[in-house]
Image (tube, rainbow, N blue to C red; front, side):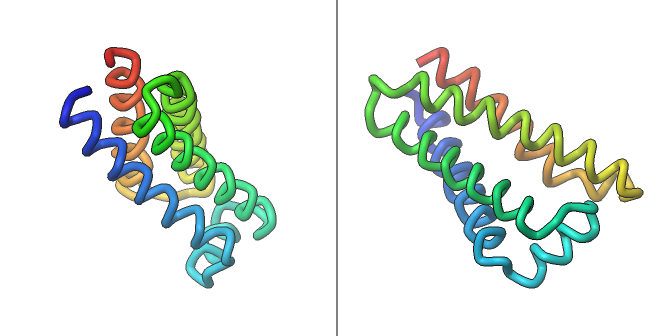
Length: 119
């Protein structure tokens, strides 16, 4: 298990868990983002739950080597979620620079898939 894989997995788990919790708790900024993306707040809560579950999958795959396929599946799901976020942002009229966080975290999730499968 490489140090890069460990660090990247921990960073992604923290970021996505925090974002997911903010969506589930319906933080005002997240409600605004949901409206901006033409989503209902409840739909955004579901996305938040998916982010929390994926973060848990990343951590479980890191802690228990037998669950590495779960970590790969979680990272794949996060990659697809970020691709969807980019599409939604662009369709909502955002500038490409507004998609940068989703692009970065999507790319990092894709790298995590590759590192998980390489372990």
